[in-house]
Length: 564
Image (tube, rainbow, N blue to C red; front, side, top):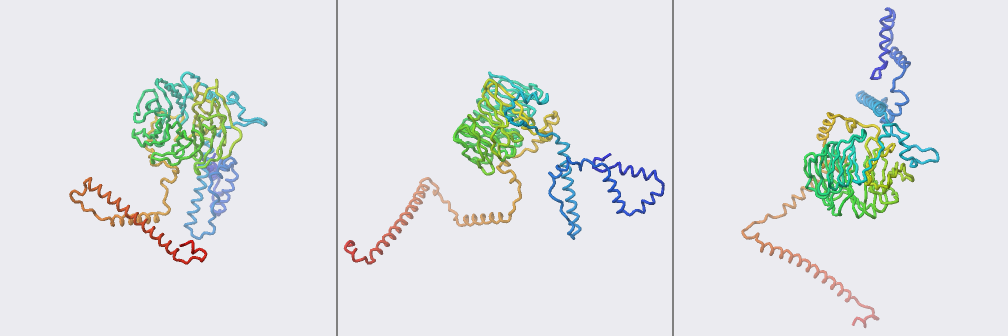
């Protein structure tokens, strides 16, 4: 029997029982043993016993993965206190690596899947029918088609736990589905043009960008709020860590609104016309906008001007997407090109050529890129760092429906497609994170857990001032505080000197009239003109003096007759 802490209780229990059964002779013999010899005997017996899971071949590479390098040798140290401190620290590092390896072994058991082709075959040749036949029943049920040809084109969105799906048709059809159990939670017809939909902090509320205003609905389809401050919205995005609803409209205005308090955080004009492309970076919550002149701008609610302005395409930008780490951005344009950008350098890495203009892009949790153009969707694997020659998967929609929107489902190997013929869900092996953290996103949370998660999210809400390109700089330690303090002090001293040089004006009666002020302005303008005229006169005098000096110099005899 092995104890939870890794100690072999059975060895010590058996030893005690043997001592109790034995006579007094062995007891006296044990007392006479040297402690070092006894320790060695115990270690030898422990080694002879079957080892625990900590030393198996499966966990050793995981321990190396979380290790912090080789153990420090403290043989040459004379300071006993420092020696003991370093020893305890190294022991703690080893224990932390061991516990992390155990967590990975027992709490992260699932591994991501992938398509593997045989010799002479390609993975993109496998159809959805082939994949559905070779997976388990629960996974096979995740691939389906909802044919709704009269109310499209459709847009689709998932909750951050991946349990619920929200679909919205252009002609006003809205529905919330527990898509794993195929249970229809809510369905309504708003009888108004709906351009975009987006879940808020959980499945209880969602926003819809309708023809005139943004409306907030609950899970039963009842209208909760109407945001009349923002007219003619086109695109929506929700920053769940900041509780900010971001939207753009036909006038090219970017709007930030706090959904927890209802306050308008920011309202900026892009001055680049209607904006139909809006996507948030999941790493730093910076928002990207795609414009009709081929530029992509990055915005935060703290600045009225874009942080970055990039010319990405020769035509209009049709879609943008970010990877989960926030290092790469993918853009698609009307010039039928898909470009991968490194945001850290603001540099294009490589580009792909599409057979027609791409309508929608999305990146999965595992870094797979989905490209929707026309009625075909292509999945690209490892497309950021290295330019790929072949796609990972391909799928063609039924009846040549045109793709409107794409969205990967979190924690599932599924991508949802909204198109003119309805909604389609296809299987993409290896796209989702196989292991979820129930404290971050729990697909099986109860009502009580949902309430607690909502309260914790409100308490941990980030302020809009924390949104920046490099969030690691926020709260960082200033390495040169003295230098910065000196510079601030010097600036304050200079400002004080400038203020001391200005004489205090005496305010007398009638000096502040409009005529007096106009006369003062005229005098000032005349004084500036006078100084300019004097400078010009001095320059003319200098040029004339230089000409006279040149004439005073004697000329050669051959040229004297021309000077007269």
